[in-house]
Image 1 (cartoon, rainbow over the protein chains, first blue to last red):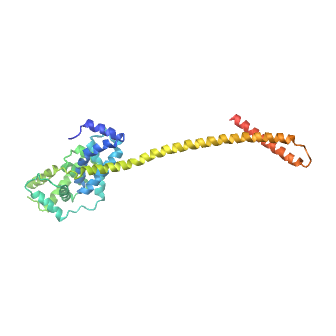
Image 2: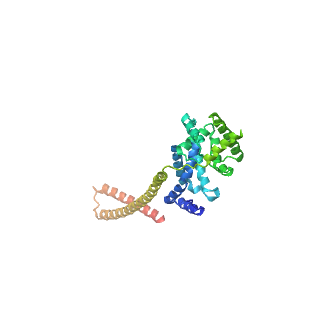
Image 3: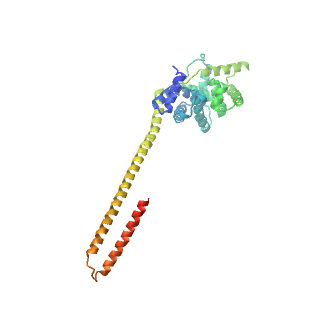
Length: 188
Length: 126
């Protein structure tokens, strides 16, 4: 059950006063959202967990800087997760997809039920294969827009990119993924 | 080409509905809270350290005040001794062999009386 905005504001206020028990409630409420976002960006379960941990420690340290005028609390958390993930993506070695990773994608694509449940590791591998040819910015815009279904305004707030750059990065990302899928033989 | 586009869009759409969840959410929450509580501890130390330094400053101030007061008593005591010496000196017969010693004693007494007087004037001014 999701918390109401009023309740969230009251918890945030208590966190600003240094109440760690109130912060526990925030962590419990938003850690899955942050993990989902981090996993799609980093394509690694363990790295995503580390990023979520770092993100919430950062949220605790900077909670005084948050105010409702800055937008939704989820957007603010996403911005922190995004910055941490971008840093990790930039320092990461080249994202090479292995034949075993491509086999996971093939299994997923050829399965008769598209609503099949995926394990975190499977989802991470599938996204890794799809975005392996993308630059960090293209990957982030693609993840936020296509996989997380965010609107351009929210992506602007999180990434700091303007609408034109978001659209162009998204277009290039889609084209590259299309080519990648054709290269892998998914040409129907 | 249209089939391709449709096929790829279907992949994207199916992935859109996948919301990965943490395998061990409770452990994650506990780990985050542990870090935060550990980081909060130095702050408590800083507060304790602040109280300790205030207490030490007050103690130093008390010791300093006590020393000043004791010093003042010593000066008063010195003036009494000087007065007694003077009385004793006046009671002594003025013999020739003691002339030089008497001269030195008198000079020393005058000097200390002058110094004492100067100090008292200075203290009364400020």
